[in-house]
Amino acid sequence: MIWLTATGLLAAPLFDEPVETLRLKDGTVLREAQAKGFLTKVVMIKHQDGARTVAYELFPDEFQAALAARRSAAQANAQIEQAQSEAEAHQQAQVKAMPPAPGAARSVAPKPGLKQGCWLTLTGCKGNVVILRIDNVSHQAASVYPWQFVARTHAGGMFPGTHWVELNEEGRVAMTLRSQQLIDPGATVTLALTLNTSPDIEDGSIEAVLWR
Image 1 (tube, rainbow, N blue to C red):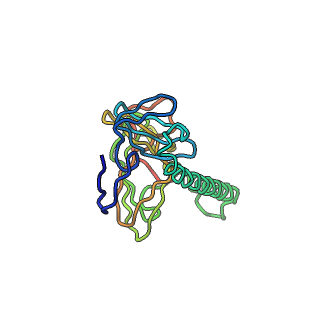
Image 2: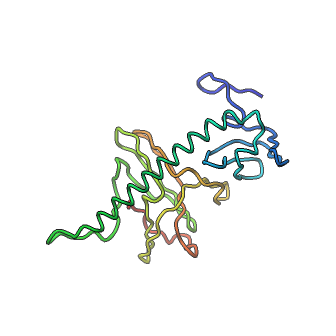
Image 3: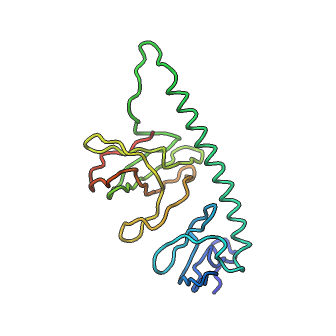
């Protein structure tokens, strides 16, 4: 079956629309399979029975050329994310190493509100997953990463973000999304964020989510 996209271009099976039957090279058969994310070694696939990751090498030959292009982009993005993460870590280390100026107050906790031209709103939480609404009120695109956020409980506990995820209809984690989420100028997005908690915290115990 062939579909036209909103731009009038042909929709590509697996990428723009589900494949009715996807038979992998290891014999696995996935029904109504569609690619939802591309990492350096695997593709995140949503299918009739849920979601899973599939190694690039397991896809039929007819998809290999298109997958190769997307894999190259994923590898380039991973390198950029790693460089940005290392730069942020180095910058934070330098800030921590600097002694405070005489009489200056030392910041002891993250602050809510506006950052990168974006307003942050906590709209829900379940276990170690929080739902965030992020409004980009600036005139520039903003990139947000899980480690930029920390959740605070009513008891004062602080739990950093770990991954952006997609939830299924039952509110459970279906798959992990890429670390960099781009928000267009003037756009509002809703994202699910997992927290680094062990064991999981009780539902409703999150008081706020803050920028780090």
